[in-house]
Every structure is written in C-alpha cells, then in structure tokens.
Image (cartoon, rainbow, N blue to C red; front, side):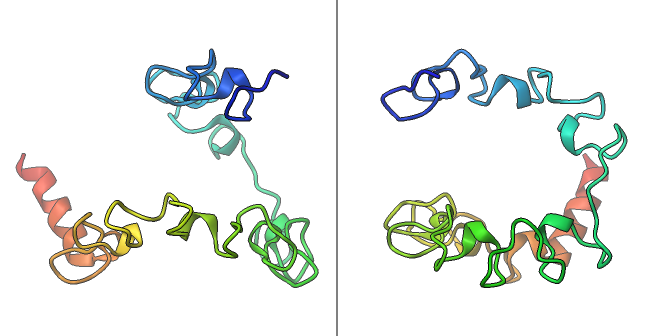
Length: 152
C-alpha cells in the first residue's frame, strides 16, 4: 500500500487528488451524487440500509451488541467506556491535549468553528436559532421550516 506525504493511502488522499476521490471531494464508492458502488437504490450506504437487508446485531438489551456496556461489547473497554473515547486506554479519538479530537480547539477539531467555539453552539455559525436554542433541537424552527416548504 503506497503512502502519500500526508501519511495516508495515496489513492484515498484528498490533498493528493487520489484516484478514489470524486469531483465532490468524497470517496467515489460512498458518494451519493456520483452513484458510487457503496450507495444503494434507496440512496443510502448499502452497508447501513435496512431495506437492502442490513440488520444490526442487537443484544438482549436491544442495543447494538458491540456497544452494549451490560454485555461487555467489543467496543467497550475495561473502564466501561467506548474504547475509542477512553482517555485511560489511549483511545483513537483522544488528542495529545487529552480531549476529544473533534472538540479540541488547539487541534482545530471539526466540531470547532472559525470563531473558535463549539460549532453547534455558535450564534454566528447559526448553531443557535432566534429562539435561543440549539437549531437542530428547536421545535419552533422545525415547524416553521415544514410550513414554509409548502409555501414555495
């Protein structure tokens, strides 16, 4: 497997314009706009489409088996946390500053906006609505969007 200067598989590197990157800057296989092989006729990822036969392995507690704490699923560490987010186990989602990579300001995580705030809670990035709530959870905004969709 060839590695690029960014220490990624060369064909999958966006910065190197790898052969497996589509014009929409996504992996060809998983691009809905390009109708990649990984997208089914229901316009979902083939591996996650219930209509195409995807059945998650559920445990007795009706949770995804690998993430169930009661069943000691494969993604649960001995500290009873999801392995990738466990600081003590050195999980892959913990940065060098001992924070979740996504929310680390120093690492410029994806969850941090250009105003150096948590993206979903930033007024300037529209994470907060005019009702002073997180936009994705605001009932009034969702109702207004639904009504406006009929007026167009």
